[in-house]
Amino acid sequence: MTRESLLNIAVLAGFLAVAIIASLSGQPYLVTLATKAVILGLAGVGLNLALGYGGLVSFGHAAFFGIGGYAAGILASAAQNYEPLMTWPMELAGTTSMPIIWATAVIAAGLIALPIGALSLRTGGVHFIMITLAFAQMIYYFAISWPAYGGEDGLSIYVRNSLGALDTMDPLTFFLIAFALLLLVLALTFMATRARFGLALAMARQNPLRLTSMGVRPFRVRLAAFVLSAMAVALAGALYADLNRFVSPSMLSWQISGELIVLVILGGVGRPLGPVIGAAIFVLLEAWLGHLTDYWQLPLGLVLLLVVLFARGGVIGLLTGRNANA
Amino acid sequence: MTATLLIEQLLNGLQFGTMLFLMAAGLTLVFGVMGLINLAHGSLYMVGAFAAATAAAATGNFLFALVAALAAAALAGALMEMLVLRRLYRRDHLDQVLATFALILIFSEGTRWVFGSFPLYLDVPKALAGTVRIGSLSYPAYRLAIIVIGVTTAIGLWALINRTRLGVQIRAGEADREMIAALGIDIARLYTIVFALGAALAGLAGALIGPIQSVQVGMGEPVLIMAFVVVVIGGIGSIKGALAGAILVGVTDTLGRFLLPVLLGTVMEPSAATAVGSALASMSIYILMALILVWRPTGLMGS
Image 1 (cartoon, each protein chain N blue to C red):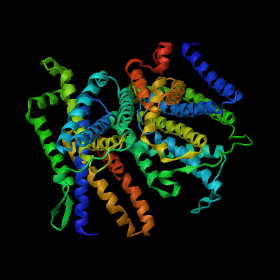
Image 2: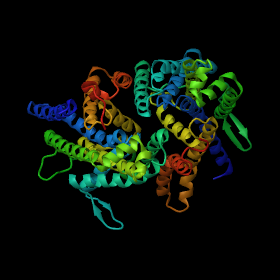
Image 3: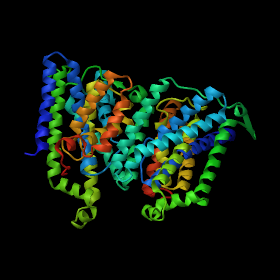
Image 4: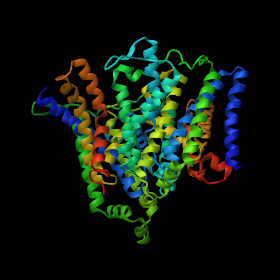
């Protein structure tokens, strides 16, 4: 077993331990903090599929994070206000059932990511970064100026959505739900990167010409990675909206896209658990620095700068001293 | 809707476009010459605006405020380049995005620390406080002055790049950096100068916009994203493209906000037309960019 896989197991076990101990010792704030890290980690794992494995620097994944959030917000607020979701062409009611909300979030994000990815992947390099940013901004401004779903004010979810008979308002229960989904997505991405698809994706990043000569079109592999990555991020978005019981256009803002990239790089690009570790560090730094000073983004910026300049390979690279093999 | 109103909106679009050009010119220069994507360009715009507001409050002289903005932004840009960015030229775009994102956090929070969260205000200079009559339209003199300054700067920049020794070096640096190093030109110094020049233009834009909007932390990022749209539409590295893109984006955005609700009002009920129109208008430049990239993936004047 490599040092990296040992570290991975330790990190996941650590998450679980922190949440359970914090819950038993009556510190729900810490449980919520751990839940936030798990959800952001899940989003980072999704982004890493495009960014790390596929080499597609998307600066617009906040769009999918927000779409997931709005899926949760719109379905839940319709159900809670006893208003139909739509009346034409058929009458649809909202729902507070988490699995239906997750499925809606994932499918909606996939459907929107498909044309965005297909158009964006016509370009590369800096153009790709900019056009993904532009699409995200488009959706952001749409959410702000469209009055039906709260516009700039966003939507509140009065009671956290339900999953079977579980008490989702209990911090530890909600943490465990998010954690289970993180494990599921981690397992899926792990399998995907080991499968034919993952190998083709790695080759599309390293040597697209060679992939083409093997009879696989890089465009389709990249598009699949982009769409799958968007779907995972949307799942995280739906959970995030449920965690805060609130969704607003700020979930779609470009700062979120930037923060998601930060998580991935902080932990280590192209490493399975890099984003999870990155998210844990990010949330801890945010909480700790926010406690020390009102101007916590200043030291956060300095830390990030030092990581980029001196700790290539992220924190995992520092700890294990090996290059990512993805 | 009268022709006068339309001309007024067109001029507003032109004024917004020249502003965007000042921002986009620096971005595209830095893209073109150093291959660097700089998210912190909006911070330099903010530095310029804050420097102008502070200098104007201290001296009451707008010209002095402009000079202070240029100097402060150029200095901040040169420092940014020498301390951080020059280590990133050979890195991939991902590292550049992250490092300059970190710089935004540092600049924004640093500014909030020094100046507080309340916006500062900058007065329109007295000589330009009135309006100018153009036919039946009376247009604010200050906005007209911004257009004039923007056009003058564009011509000056064109002359600098095409008619001076520094311009030759910049163009050569774009084409082949090893070669011009071999010819005995100090590449590091050239890069710092190019960066400071771009920073000064961003600072100028920030100072000029000060009297129209309020000067506050976070003012740079919306403009930065629009300037990116301009650069991508125009073609990365092309100053001419940046000018064309800036005017196109400025006019599209302004006219879209004005015309779309009116046009939609002819086919919809007024409240729906306002909602759909304003939603579409705020998305219009991004739709424009997507269309142009689908048509020409390297932008209007990109190679």
